[in-house]
Image (tube, rainbow, N blue to C red):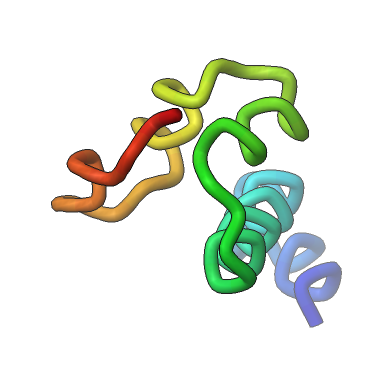
Length: 62
């Protein structure tokens, strides 16, 4: 489905959507921002800034 949306120019970057899903599922399974950052090759603070919801910045960035 996402691929067909991308072909129809409805999605700018399918990779971004895949990363958002990865982060959402990881957080739901209990991963912290350090683990997510390591998986993405970025700092925990940057992972939280890019993918965290408003108000979640108070979550531990350990």
